[in-house]
Length: 127
Image (cartoon, rainbow, N blue to C red; front, side):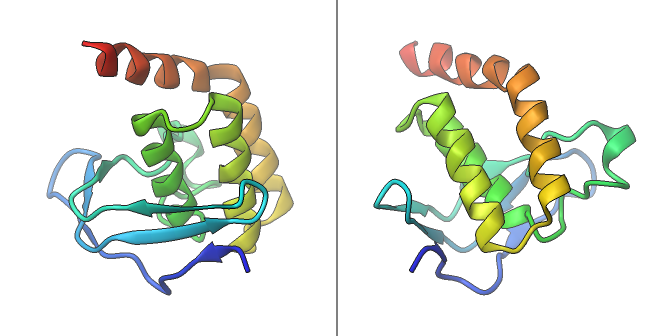
């Protein structure tokens, strides 16, 4: 069975700023990639990189929050290609029963600009 092992996520939310810190690890099992990904306690994430204007329609802290944390971790570590990271995000959102329109909108946003974040992480990891 694929999906997240945990039923809830524990994050530290600062008084200001957009970065949250995972206070308890998170485990995702992917059906398509036949892997289990563990996101460790202490990992920092901005959740979904959703423009402020669209956050009322696509909230960062809604059902998809687990999937956004997974996606940030995958981009950060570079253990998969950008396409694979984006595909696993979609699979994770499906496992969370995120609606089709939200999934399609997120994938469209990633197709337009996700490469910037993915490549920036690769440049940092090379240093």
